[in-house]
Image 1 (tube, rainbow, N blue to C red):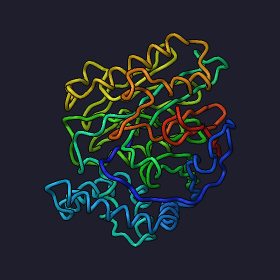
Image 2: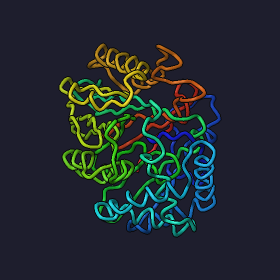
Image 3: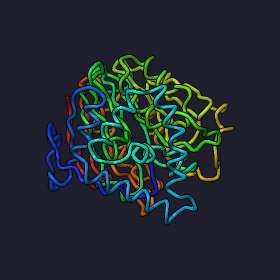
Length: 373
């Protein structure tokens, strides 16, 4: 998740609590995705992120402004005007997460509206890059009974070096390990209550003004039960949605295929679930913005389903790693390659052990490191 047609020049140098999972000949330190540790109330954790990233966040805003000036007919003031409508909804319905953004804005010296604008994907584009694949297995089909969550995050290659893990310790919430680009934008994550969020880009035709979907991701990761996570995924009034794949440590797996105004909750009745970048539920297909751009997603979806079905009862960390490296239909494969969209990080979460194996870039070329609380 979080796919934007621009580069983010953010360099994070804080890397704590990382442990090598599997030794190899790769240059280990260069391959680690760094970790930022933040603690306190919502404003304080945002302020800490903004402090760590002051210079880089200012560069990010400049790049956003350059992108608008050079790639669209809009002006930055148009973006600001639109985002303030989204901001008002967010202040009303999710004020705690606006406070996190406000803290980052204050620490970095960036105007709140500018920083919030950069998180409103709904303003920048209606037809997103089609990337990301999920392969989820409950204990019913894994070799050792663990609940395993596997995900390849496909984005613009320019974002790969800006991937970062944020370890949240926020008052009143479970601890969270979230992975994304730039600190505030969350792609995937899991928490100490045993809830994980992964998911996939969807392009919908009913996008509207409301709470940006980026804030839905943050709210999901504060959930303590699978029901709370589902409620956060379908939160109204939302502006748009991803396909939110929600899993808990009991092996409850839901794919929430959302649009701005509707959703379908797909339950993993066979002990496993896969999803890519198109609507599967028949009642949701009417919201597909451009059905002619789904070939890669369809191929990845069917390939992942076949791999999971043929390995029921044998699924393990090693086997999921092999699946994430799969190159059928390369370059538009599960392990995606290309100059426009590629896999920029790969992750396997064990929800029972509360561990995350994370590889930077294409997993076929990289190495997984273990992250935990």
